[in-house]
Length: 68
Picture 1 (cartoon, rainbow, N blue to C red):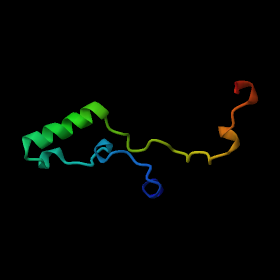
Picture 2 (cartoon, rainbow, N blue to C red):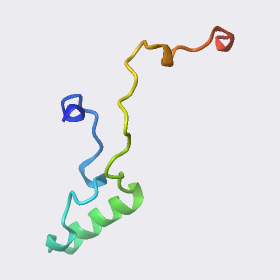
Picture 3 (cartoon, helix red, strand yellow):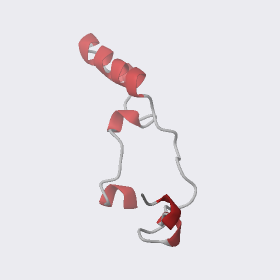
């Protein structure tokens, strides 16, 4: 995917279904992974439905009145 090529991805544990907790037999490893998921949460399956506007597009320009 384009996000992977752009290195614009989240840590793998934040993706739903990225790790099978039932397959982790070491209690320390499982507790560590569960703690990371609990503390940092998980990203929804899809964050955006439209691509970001390109850089330097009109949507990214700040009106002159806000420049201090």
